Length: 279
Ligand code: AMP
Image 1 (cartoon, rainbow, N blue to C red):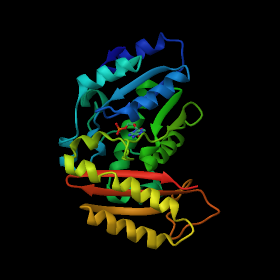
Image 2 (image 1 turned 120 degrees about the horizontal axis):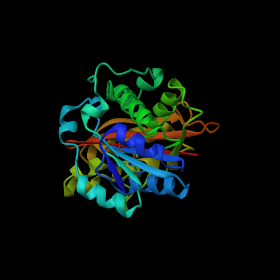
Image 3 (image 1 turned 30 degrees about the horizontal axis):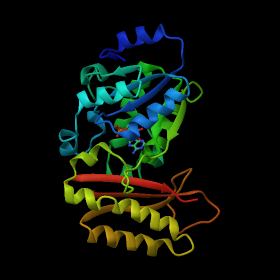
């Protein structure tokens, strides 16, 4: 695996390679979810490029940014074992040479106003900034992202359109990798204490219950989930049902549509999100 810190060196190296480039952007503290995206990229015959960059502009919560886990030595070990070809490890100055405010801002419209967009003002603008910049640096043919961040996948799909890269880059969405008890793997799970870790899978159980109650009333299922989460010590932010294609929020189950259930809740200092396709 070759490691680059500078865009110019990375680009010079990538120019000399003949395989298509499969890109997996991450914020590090890698786990099996990240590695599965890399595995999919590798299996497809790509030259795999993983980036690790904790992007300051997508954090609306200062403490979340400051406490975001950084485990670079372990990450490199995992990437070596997974057969990653290139690791891009830029500094903040490399990604934002003109400072945070001077980079291009993309408008994601409706997607910025709901769920993660509503709960984390400015978050998707930051995601757009960093993914845009990384795509310009890596210039991949394939971009691999996880369904775990469902709304982010939709934002990035829109970003590709806004950047007029939707023909040049194919977005491939990987399934959510889970722990044995159903908890979606996440770098932030490392910040849970033992007691919190045990109850953390309640979010997954709630999604399963929403999926299993499609003959009943969604508001009832939603309220049950909110009650269970609160009982177990979470502060729920949303338990929502949406159209899987447009993310239009749905007040009720709708048998004719593909739907997704989405949950965000805080457990102690850690904010967790997860989702499940229903049909
Ligand atoms: P992050 O490092 O959290 O920014 O995530 C980097 C990429 O990995 C994003 O595309 C995430 O959606 C994806 N990802 C995070 N967790 C998982 C998971 N449990 N399963 C699959 N992909 C994931």
